[in-house]
Image 1 (tube, rainbow, N blue to C red):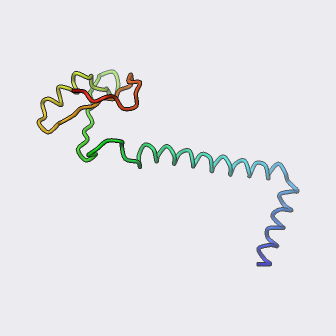
Image 2: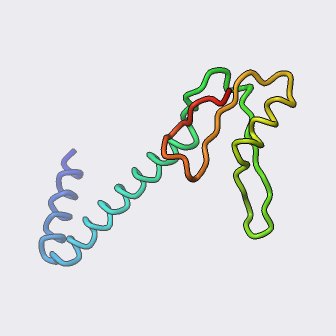
Image 3: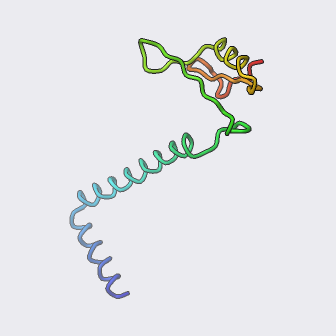
Length: 108
């Protein structure tokens, strides 16, 4: 225990002699901890938490293709057509880049 206190006193004296380095080290640690927390918060919200829907194991995602971009959201009419062509689909919801709501209302 005495050795730990001696090392803490030595570290405090060393940092007080070079306040520029101490400030840089403290800001670097604070920035690193803050960024790690932000990244985990986003990853938790997007990847780890379950979606707010029932029967997630039956969830289907529809993607379209467009020659001018790598992805394309299918239109509402295509979503309804896909739903009507499948006997196992009971409801259909859509969310696209122009949807102002987080989860659009089910399409009937």
